[in-house]
Length: 207
Image 1 (cartoon, helix red, strand yellow):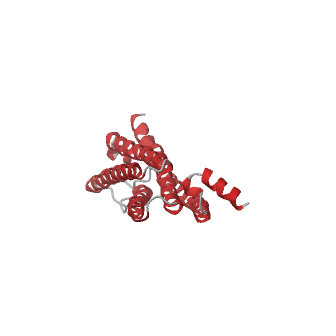
Image 2 (cartoon, helix red, strand yellow):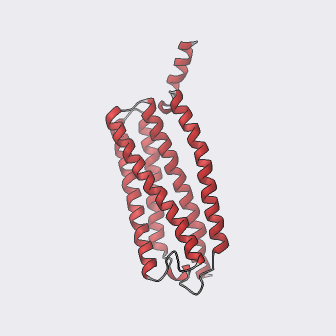
Image 3 (cartoon, helix red, strand yellow):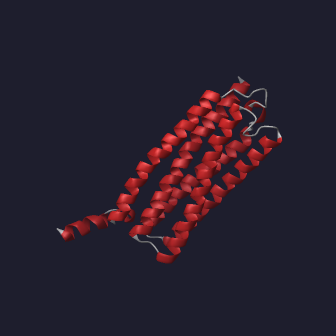
């Protein structure tokens, strides 16, 4: 029975071969449920407060499609490179895993840099978190996502350090896989932000 169980484990992806790894992955899926509830609340708040600019700048006046599209491409590409990292991890290619996780981090940093620049521009134009209900909802929603991306970058860097110290094991592989789930989740959230916040406002502007 023990041998059969060991055989079964060896057929599984590396991240699922330890009981700790399997439980951690299950626990993280439950955690993502709480994260979904958080962002659903922020989206609902934004939807209620949209248009309430209190005489301040409107999103149609300040939103620029070019910068937001570049941000979106960076994050979408980082999700793809994160997927490549998992593929290389399952092939046991530690150096290639390092490379693709490194690229993912760099793309994430690029996204954050553009988002910070965007926020600074809005503040310069008179739109900040205290300007109106709309801008409060916008900065909280986009800022919460940005904070999550920042945390994700730090998390991946920490995992890279652990991989350097312990190599590819069922435990470190589970950590990489969980971080990838988190990163893909942030990518999905951004797609909703891009479409419901930026794109819808710009379409209204041209309508």
